Each structure stands twice: as structure tokens, then as C-alpha cells.
Length: 107
Image (cartoon, rainbow, N blue to C red; front, side):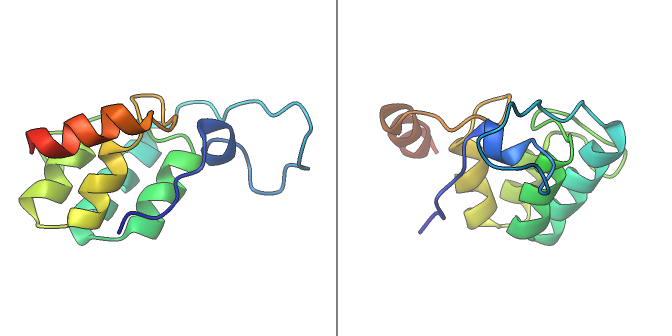
């Protein structure tokens, strides 16, 4: 089963931000793109989420893999990461349930 996925405001803000304050998204960090793809290759859902929280772009490609994290996770058989990445949109925001269901059926 896919873990509950926080909204982008929870994913892309520094963990030490006080709750309820004006939270600004973390700026894009190309180093986190690479960390995101490597985590997807290795099968670490926790590291995938951390890379997104730290500014990694879900659709970025890197030198370790010719494709985004979703492709890397699928190629390496990491179903939990595939489901997680399908459950969030390009910006990391949680998709609506009907969109999630459509994506999973198309697999």
C-alpha cells in the first residue's frame, strides 16, 4: 500500500519550519535531482521524499539514468516508489484520487 503523501507545502519546506506559518517552497536544487534519481534506483522511498523536500524536481533526469526518477524506479522494480511518484504531480503536489486511479490502471 502507498503511504499517505503530504501536500507539496509539506514536502518542499524545511523540516524545521514552524507549522502554520507562511511556508515558502524550497528552491530547485540540481544536486537533489541526482539524489532523487539515485534513491529511486536504490529503492529508498524515504530518500526519494527527502530529495523532493530538499528541492529535487520529480521530472528531472540525471547522469546515472537516462530518464526521470519514475522510470528509474520502474526499471528497478520498486513498486512503492512508482506508486508514490504517480500519486504526486510535477511540482510534488498530491494528485486527486481519480487521477491516481487512472495512472495506476494505465500501468
